[in-house]
Length: 317
Image (cartoon, rainbow, N blue to C red; front, side):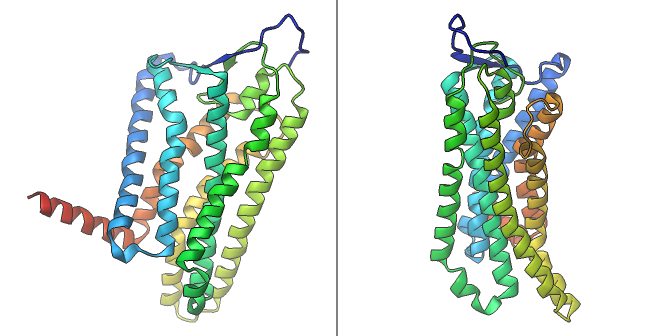
């Protein structure tokens, strides 16, 4: 970062270099990411369709799962199409306007925070189902589910407002090359000509608050679940109860592991290339894996998928 002078011009457009160091593998990476993106869309749309059509899945756990699937579609769509355009140089290719860059960062942060809170709400649902089964209908009613989901989306939307406002107050006077495949905060801060200390601190505190609040709800919920399971004498009943949590726990581990690594840090000078790899994992790979995890680890979802698609093929005959 250099001190700002009046001779410099404010940057109005950024260039995202993406994976510039692997020119010989551009076609391979384009094909790989396009396949993963399309696979993510199909998987999550299938989850939404199945839950909507199968009355057996009209329950709170699957209500939250449809919200998660909708979010995953938007989450990947914020970054992947622009990255793919950069690979083949269409639609502006690697260029993105200043306003477009901040908008992308806002939406990406909003959706990431919302996912944290949705996963926490799903953990609460599992806690009540296993630890207080007799009160489940009263504590996790449809009204409660709707309010919880609305709160997740609202708090997620509010999360990036202050960080993006502070980002908009920074001066970008050149260079304008972002060493990333989307407008993430860290590579943007490297380009700023202003003092980024306050912005870094706020980013750290906001990220920490989101992760700690949501992960605390998850940890407390699963702590109580484990305690309850330990007091169930029947091994079969214990296994049956825990099996309803395995998919969610796997998704939580994948998502939070990468987020804690990426965002709870104050320095912008960490390895950019390594950050790109981790970013690919939580922004592309995880949304693709989540529907697979829920469908493969959940007998009800697998059964519903079979019924819906067998019915569809029967009607097509």
